[in-house]
Image (cartoon, rainbow, N blue to C red; front, side):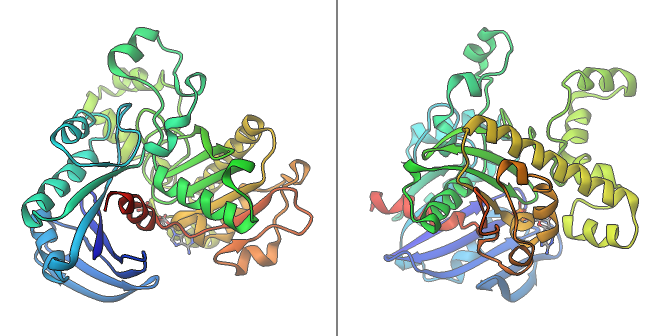
Length: 385
Ligand code: ADP
């Protein structure tokens, strides 16, 4: 018995295979699908073990390629990461026609993700007809956010008519790291409050009170909140009509500007990649430094806000590419928070890749926890087997 976990994105498919005891037995990805130099990677621990450049024109070919390299007969179930479950899909569910319809209804809310997630499900139904398909939603962990926190102060009928509200994303990752943090503290999730910072290409931060999410920085779409690789995060909404009028931008152009040309890339003018910006800033590039300063200032501002939301914070967790790998970003994000009982241990911060990095006297423990979204998805699949 094996569980295949699939994460079908716009240009990549990532996969992991787990055995019945949830040991991961394989992991890999097909990246840059549709480009001439699509690349197939398989991993052992964190580093790619092999890399092959091949011609992979579309997602179907990519999936066939992956399934051609694993023992298909052993796959009993497939866990699919689905980004948006809307208001109805609040828990992991076996895929039915009705579930597929709901996923489809959320296409407009997550246009870069949900169509690919659904096509992954439909391809697997054809290629592996005997396997059970389970959909696991990125929005599900956030379904406990109270109404006063998830509503926007727009006319209420717009919520009724279009479900315009905060949904939140990266829920699978926030859930995994908050569970792991509770384990590190030797406490139940229901006994503690945690702020989880998922800082990757996309970034979000979540306030988890006694195991339930009460607020999160991404909103109706994954554009709101922190500054990201190419996404602007929070801005004054009045900038949108102002820019459309003054620059003569269409809806689609303004969307591209906010989601694809802003964030770290927009400010630095060089790159959306934090590692590149850190290197450039060290070499004296002022705009790269400005992008880093803005990024960490926004993280710190949200940590302060969520501290107020939670009242007491037992742990702050950093995860995903930037959160896991950059001591500089972690320390700049927590600068001068000693007054709030948050004290980083500089030595631990620069050496520990997984575990506690705060000083002994810090009232709030600070941790780095490498995320493992695939493991959570595989765990979610288990009850359905
Ligand atoms: P995705 O959201 O695509 O899964 P990741 O979680 O892999 O992204 O995060 C990608 C980000 O992590 C990039 O901005 C990258 O530069 C950054 N990153 C990776 N390694 C480091 C590092 N050593 N120092 C700073 N940033 C890093």
